[in-house]
Image (cartoon, rainbow, N blue to C red; front, side, top):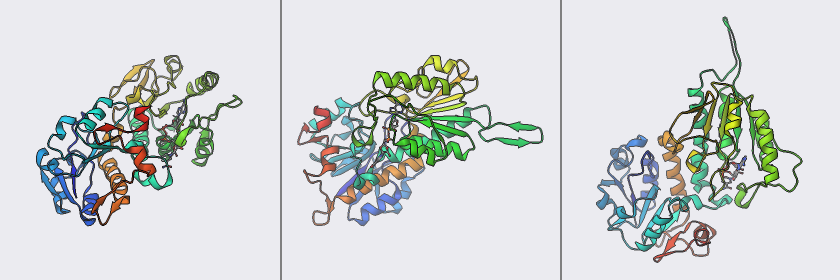
Amino acid sequence: VKIAVLKETAAGESRVAASPETVKKFIGLGARVSIEKGAGVAASVNDADYEAMGASVGDLSATIKDADIILGIQGPDPKALKGMKSGAWLVAGLDPFGQRARIDAYAKAGVEALAMEFMPRITRAQSMDILSSQSNLSGYKAVIEAASVYGRAFPMMMTAAGTVSAAKAFIMGVGVAGLQAIATARRLGAQVSATDVRSATKEQIESLGAKAIFVENVAGIEGEGAGGYATEMSDEYKAAQAELVSAHIAKQDIVITTALIPGRPAPRLVSDAQIATMKPGSVIFDLAVAQGGNVEGSKADEVVIKHGVKIIGYANTPAHLAADTSALFSRNLFNFLSAFWDKEAGRPVLPDDDEITAAIRLTKDGKVVNERLLA
Ligand code: NAD
């Protein structure tokens, strides 16, 4: 079986879908691995590092030619797949809702597209979950960037010249990214609080030594939907949440927002009126900025200053830590493909009746087949 790894072409994408470690492991399973020239450079991996593990390095057409499986971080432009074997797999973060036209084009090209972000949240698939691996490092990076832009220190410091007080950091949305943001802000010495709509997170927040800020006594809210993801909340809940957050946010120096709802625009958590109550010099990092933003006025890859508050956020946060995020993404891909490896066939085989297959397979035999896209 031939596995091909493409150089990412999306603007600002610096990650790569294979590491020298996973190349070695694929070859250990009996695969041939072909890497597009320069694919890893932006993630601090040189062509020679891949070659040292037994991969071949070549141009795009040589990489794709005869490939059975193509790995990517994002989905490639369908035009780039010209010359691809019919029925070959494309395994990447394909952004199925955002890139629907591309998915149709993959189907038409006879590619079997497998979307890694649709990996089900089941124990067996935990090691294959790109959303978790990438969010984890994003949560860390958001705090580091906020700390860097903030004109004050995070920890309380007692110096001969006087005392510097600890920064107050508020984390909104306590999924994978939020938990890491809490831990990182705590390590830097901030006084940390956090909120979420899922009541299960309360205990997690407290176990990390942060204060949980929660809406109480609003009937009929659970907050947790399928797969442990958040659901859209009732209007009553939203009003109660806005009031609670308003009172709290005015006292914060740093706010990190991470709230996402799958397949929908990100929920608005911070309004311009709330920003106006914050102290000048405060910093907000909007991790959802690329999904429409949790914060009113946030713009991807820009520092927006409103009422003296700096609002920041990256279009692609994981790409700002490309060496580590690439290594973890690559391992997610390897863990997935190796779990389905069929020794006799000498390649991975996806049973039609497997829960993972049903969740991630977008196209097959020229058609879009995924339930979530057909619904
Ligand atoms: P996510 O990225 O979808 O959302 C981030 C957080 O924002 C979530 O905690 C969500 O509840 C919260 N949120 C949504 N709307 C909000 C609002 N209006 N106000 C405040 N917060 C809001 O979430 P995630 O990081 O993917 O994690 C979701 C859950 O899935 C977690 O419990 C996580 O531990 C679990 N998980 C399980 C697996 C697995 O079993 N394989 C893998 C990854 C994550």
